[in-house]
Image (cartoon, rainbow, N blue to C red):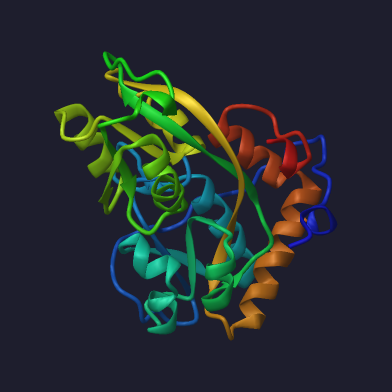
Length: 264
């Protein structure tokens, strides 16, 4: 994808977005007033439950912008990530769109209708705070936890033989945190943005090393739903241009948006 050509410059003024929406767990089959959004929780800061149990996050705010554009209300459908990234949930009509920090890959582009990129992502190595592991070079003989069907899993599998570690897959990031804190895994490789947020509230974990993989997130629709895909891309273009994306970025990432996805 041509990221530069499809990106608009974020305005300096931050505009209010009115991002409140009804977010619940359930199944598909909504009416014309409902935008069914598949996601996988938790994956902070993109999608997770707040203290009141509502699903919130970077992706959810952008989905609310899309729903506002379509005169709809967001309904969150929580499913496993593999059903999202494989396209099976969209093909089955479980939801109209998936928002789950989905990295763009050649394989996913074959089965999903992917939007323009909206976030630059890298991987990270995370360990228990009292671990002797300081880098990938220290992983020999260890067990590394990854999220099933993620690009973190693909990256870990690709280097496992080189660094002599065992890959162990889990369905969600919450399961990975539990594995690290219980001692059933020695380290984890997963997206940098979510680990950066999660280690802030998990004192027993440390972000040990950042790994530049230069991935980009996109939203996904059924491969044949070009109409909705065009609406998503238009929403993103407008949000980049009028400052709403910059506001969302700073709200959830905690730093100003530079105006260039490649420099995140």
